[in-house]
Image 1 (tube, rainbow, N blue to C red):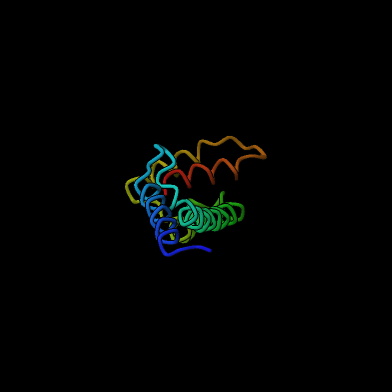
Image 2 (image 1 turned 45 degrees about the vertical axis):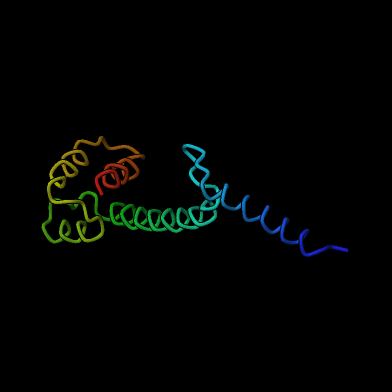
Length: 115
């Protein structure tokens, strides 16, 4: 039969273990108790990034040769909200890309780096 002291001792031991884990920092991994929460947060962040990347790539697939048109360019900046200070650099780098099957992918990477 388990006595009240056994239960109290086991409860105290469990609380001590939780406190030790809560104070634990394993360097680059961080607190092990927050790993599940961070995993969910990273999943949501990655999904948002991928959705943004897909929109940018779809726009560039249809309009990469029309970026000199002001209306198309305005739509591009709405799809890819690059800071105004980086926009000229993005356009210059896209314009310098050679015609190749990877051109859209390269233009997408250039754009996403500057978001």
